[in-house]
Length: 343
Image 1 (cartoon, rainbow, N blue to C red):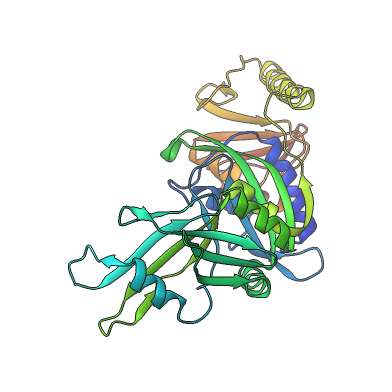
Image 2 (cartoon, one colour):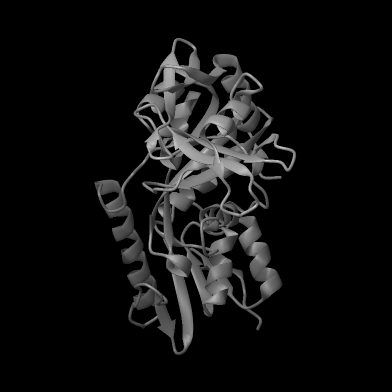
């Protein structure tokens, strides 16, 4: 099994790759791409202290929200009160009531054309109150803490700049945090600022009892780390081509590509969707990374018809094993053949 230290080293190598094309179309593409690059098959990974932690990834500056956890308001009859007072006939035409609404701490929601209710924060409790200051339900500190830590006990949280859409979406994984513990004060501040919202989703059974479809506390993905008490930065955010170090790294990469092409008596090519150079019809890929090239990059190269892959820092063991099994690509490290193509 891959160790925590190895995962962190791989993350830093992935950052050096710059923008990487998604491995799957849609909202789950970012998670799938990161798992492939880290060469893991599931999002539960070894933590720094032998325990398991969850891997999560998120696009920066997106409008969609993710659910932190679901928890119905107290007391137990709060959902019945909400449904009875503010519910409306279901659009399904089954003559049952439902209540689907989002509430925040900045203002009252609108239900049936009138002010409904909002979040009110007092001391260590979050109330749902009407415009007449009537309390409809609440959550206390311990209830929220238990719900949060049961759903999100410990995370390795990786953020990425995203560009493009669909199969052409690309990610630049440039920030990572190790997160644990519930920060109640930060949680309250995020509620006050409207960064955390509460989605009320209540339906009704045929016998009239309320059916809780999941009252969810939701947050914008790039703010998730602010909910945690313990926040350790694993990888510092860095904009591509905005700092000298990144610009120099890319220049070194281009210089190495040119060097390898001229060494073989051919002209360098490069650019999106193009090989770094060609020898006749045979495509070649060149990388000047500080870390060994991982398996997903070799897999991608084979799919793109690359016959020779040159890496100054070499290749990870899974990448080498893949090339040996595939037999369609030659791997070269510092002029020495690591794996020779036989097909």
